Length: 333
Image 1: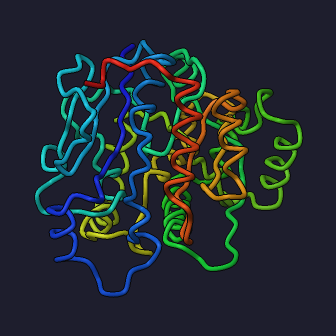
Image 2: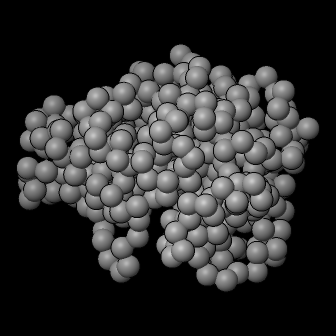
């Protein structure tokens, strides 16, 4: 079985990209299109080193870009496929500055394997993986327990997307039927016993609809067929999402595909060991220890909203990754 990796990347410092973005940018920004979302921490070489060292079996890496490329990248690397937005996203949705648009058209990437793993560029492998860690018996591996959506504080764009994703999934998968067919996957022996109890209680208390699934800020295993199914089932909703050049509260995102696979039973139960933390003074020591000691399977390095000492923090992270992954990969010049 062929398995591909897909990673999204943008160079927020590219003046040509900035000029195009500014033509469509609203004067009032929110957290979905602020500058920090496009900031380059200089860590991308270590993403490729991790793939080469920890997942050498991957068939191809599809590097999705607006058109610019990182300077270090070896464009002739045998496993590398550089793919521009205009090579797979329908023209009517371009240009786009929304990850939601890219995500919901990701299955259209030329020569993409039916089984693929989707990464943001802030998600890193920290240990060796086998293909079975992502796909077992041909099915995507993920955590299928029910976890209620938490909406508190200032509701951000991503939370709106999660609500929209859940509503769409509930519209197509009656919970009673799903639990009857796939309840054993929602309450699996691989999960913690207290998680299974929570899921069972939610099935009893809210039998008619799913209250939510885990928001995994981690690499996600997908089937291309899942995206085709969602486009066939909800063409107007996905079209509306893709018409927005920036992320809005009306959008769905890739979690709809992840949760669609869960609700339909098209997954293999797994525990996702991922550390998700913003890069700040209060977290940098833990982040560096996690990277150097490989204390989690994955790490997701969120860019904070507030003011930070960017040079110092990015330098610390580079040092930590250099200890873990000192050798250049075939993806580097």
